[in-house]
Length: 522
Image (cartoon, rainbow, N blue to C red; front, side, top):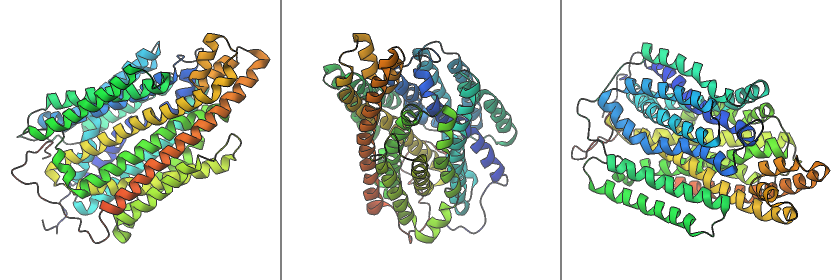
């Protein structure tokens, strides 16, 4: 395909701005939630959520999102992408209201699942529309701006969440989504053109149901095992059952004519390698971000606002470096840029194995900064490689798969690394809590937030429980961060083996006419 004239949409940059704004509400909510975890665990000022319930408040969103992403991608092509963007924003806003006024952790988990439903309608259209309205020569820059906007949301979220928690009740961190959604609805209605595919494929209902059941069962087993131990048959039944269902999902997708996930795409190295890297990086990083908030707010004693400010170097680095990554890729190649980014992420995750309760805050902030710089050097070249490996009419496939792997990788990272953290924490703190009453001992052994709650009821003796909880948490964090660093290091091997180098032409390969188009983009 010869590229001479600019084939982009005349209003492509305005459209990009609207898509980025629509995306901000999804990312903003998840980063705000990170600084609210301690408050949600508080039985007086929050909901008294357990460690497992806090994990499910995150994973209920990501699992629904991942399970329905392919379906909404196909429905958007069938009935109109702009229409589904509007529907997704409206559902997200409604679910934010329900989350803000939840009366117990179960209500919040259900409302967060509904937010995942809205996010699943929003996300597929962002990258697929970017890929279609931009000329391939401008696409890398547009994706870099898209990635930088995610960094901006990461920066704004914790700070905004901290400010809200300083002055209002915990529900305000969800209520803030409503004006953002209203502004997004107006902007989309005015600026984003409607588009649809006149010949959409059939909806793979069975495949979607298999993926949802498999992911939910697998994550439930992991979270339940981390909370109560892996020595019970029910835990392994959920884990093995989830893996069996996911295996059946892959086998089913290979046989049907219109699969929600065309597994043949993974034969393309320029598609499969960055998909794997995205999954590994988000698995490692999101797990660390989850318990990093507890480290800063409980072990270090920082307020939610101070915690948000400490996450600012991470987000600022992404905001600065992500838009420039396209230039670096053109000069040095995706393999070199991605490898450097993965090395930075691996080293910074490994740095948490030596961070203690009294480590200088400047060192912690520096580690966050280089972690953000590493992420900024990984995501744009990975997304560009994914999107450019497919022709424009199949851009929805790349968008759906990459975002699903990113969300599922993050969810499983929170579940698995959270389980590792919980199991080691419980082992380390048990000797110090053996003399406590049964109810107090169970709460203190469950999580560091529970230990702080118990300590507040013990008077002068509470100091010993807090010291033991901090020591146990730090030990558990060291092990979990080591596991995260190993996972990120696996991405280096994937990049060196399969990612394209400097001299690979950025040329779109036409889709074979004999293959079905999963999420065709007109």
